[in-house]
Image 1 (cartoon, rainbow, N blue to C red):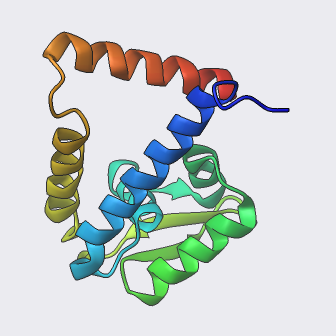
Image 2 (cartoon, rainbow, N blue to C red):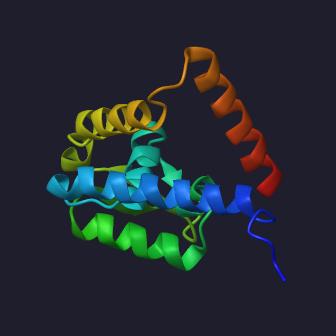
Image 3 (cartoon, rainbow, N blue to C red):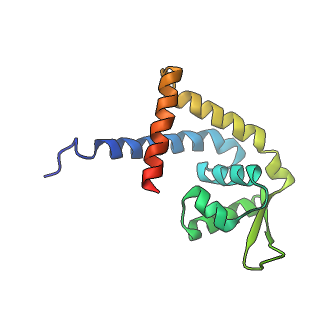
Length: 141
C-alpha cells in the first residue's frame, strides 16, 4: 500500500504548479491569455526571432501543444509566424505591434504572482526556494 508521505514532495510540487497556473489564468483573463500562452509570448518578446522548435524546448512542451499555442496567439494577433529565409522548414515567431503592447501587463502579472508566491518568506528563503526549485527542474530535464 502507498503511504501518504511517500510522494509528498512531488505531490506538493504538482499542486503548487496547478495553483500558480490557476492564479495566473485568473489574472490574465482580461487580456484574454492563458498562463502558457503568456509564457510563449514572453519568450517571443525576450527572444525576437525565436523558432517554434526553440519555443518547444523553452516551454518543455510537445510539438503539437506548442503548435496549438502558436496558432492561438496568431489568431489573437499577438505573434506572426514567418518562414525562415535560410531554412523553409523553420518558423520564426515575431511579436506583432499588439503583442508588443502585452509586455507591461505581463511583467506586472509576473511580479504580482511572484510576490504572492513568496509572501512570508525572508529574502534568504526566497533565494533558497528559487535555488532548490532550479535544482529540481534541472533534475527533471
